[in-house]
Length: 173
Image 1 (cartoon, rainbow, N blue to C red):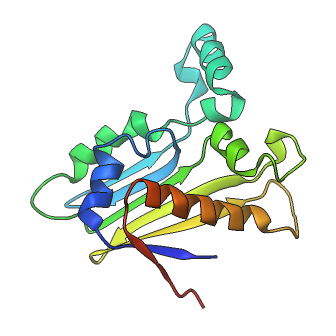
Image 2: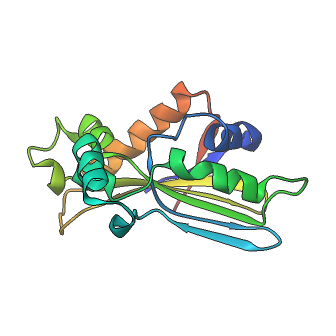
């Protein structure tokens, strides 16, 4: 497991909150602490939608992805909550790669159905003027093979480089 420390926090926050860099990721959970606290759960509430809306959304996005809000749908709420002269005391955002992203990263290496691929998440944490990202692979059932996690770590680092987000790896001994 690696820990990625972001060097240019201001640039990263612009990517997270203002640009479309992370828009296609699914929101698992987000939390911000300022003068108050905001907690967002990314699970989409099926009962909010009529059956036609739900069916259409799931056919467009796929069954797994339609169960979660995208970061694009939620980031404006977070941005308005934390904007101001002071940085938040804590910002935690747990994002998951969409089904399409998972298949692009892992598909060729794993001869299993998409539903059996591990979820690929990144846990973004800003606290005490430090910003870290911990990539994680969560397997649907026990597997001694941890190569998906390594592939995700490498893919995430390449994604950050392409977006010109400066980082270094912390020793995680």
